Image (cartoon, rainbow, N blue to C red; front, top):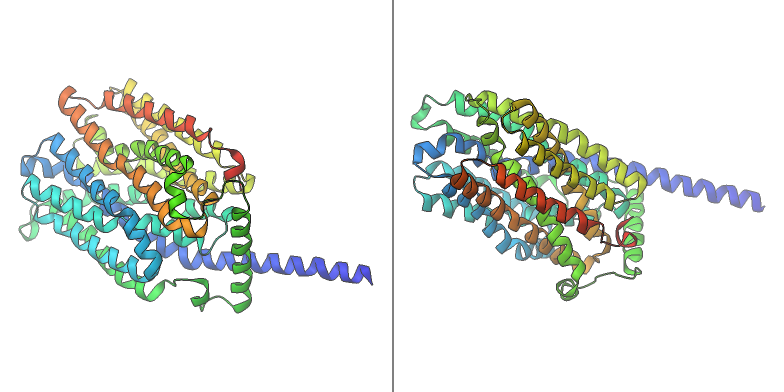
Length: 444
């Protein structure tokens, strides 16, 4: 009798495990590809100004400092509205608010083609940042409604691999657009066509969000009732485990008073300092090696992103399998540091510079998905909306500081080498801070 009940119990556990894994696969295939495409265009709309710069500065008579300020001022709007936007998303639901954000920022990004003065450049970049502010932290929050902590490293890596893919596709595509439309078709320059053709798809995707995404498990008609129940039970267990931890944070007031949250914001800032230097200046650094063709610059810019995309997914799988978070974040950050130093010290050797930039891109971009399981591991559901947005906003300050710093140093010295040394130092500090975070808080 006992053997029979024991066997039945084992079979029930195996059935639940198989059911859950099947449900997670179904959710991954349903949600991630579409959200991946949305994030790809989100990132293209954010950083395509780096390619537009190759023509835009000469056409509008803008300095490197003006470009750096314009590229960076986007993040003043982004940081200003990050927390309010995520709180609105938490109240209205992801589907409606993400749709609104995408339609607005896609329209503003396309409107960059009308820029003629530095002031217009600054204003449009600021409001585009304002419109985009809630998208990324909203997606991080959205995933917590579907996947427990032990699944999020891989899910975040798949989602955020849109960043290297945006570079892999966006580099050659942007280079081709600049070359193909250089003759001024339709009365517009190549950089104007670039903004138009990369902004409008975001508007269409925003409309599609309304018909494709579900706000919660309960609304997912593509899951069976049994699958929904199993996934919800897994989420409930995850929340109970987090709530019973010695350092669970359950309210936004606690978030503001918790030094771990602020330290995580500093760590994320250090990662983003490297990421945005690469995103906004990679085409210019490659062009400075002597490659004048926009098409050639585009293809060479794709190399670091190709390696980064593969590396990001491999490290994400490893982190989930080993249930280890800190070293899977700090090692890629140190790798980015080494790559930037290599590019700075051998700036006259094109091959070594591209190898260095590849290491830097692999490390910095992998640091992004490896970072987000850390705060999600101890922020309770009530604190997650504001807490994740606050950490993201603190990190996105780097989006202003990094491109402006690089642009100003290049105007002062004629080179980006000094800026790369500074960015390497910031990455080192961030990597050391990661190891201060107690392993018991985040290794799940």
